[in-house]
Length: 116
Image: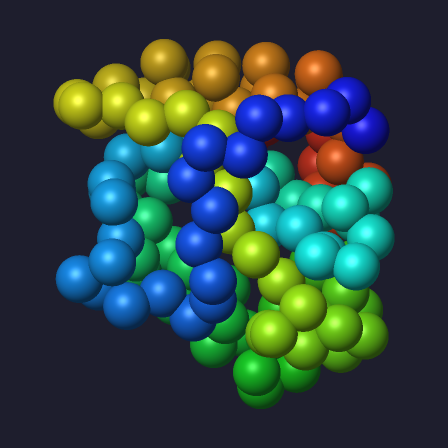
């Protein structure tokens, strides 16, 4: 994976008070093996990460690759990096940005390689 400047890296689980933005493209990665990562986007970061973690804790994440990563390294082995933040929500801009990062970094954990 291409080296990324880690500007905002957060420990999971998130606390609402610590969440720096709601609208963003993010990466969740394995601290021991940074080539294992997932890229996503959201208009509400705190809620989206909460849903991911709930699925993972209950062994019910729809992305089997993501579930396997969590099962291997646990929550303490994952970090959240904000790749890009937005002041206002625009669906097309957010999706285009997510696709840009997916094309650039080619995450193995994402099942879909095109943003839907």
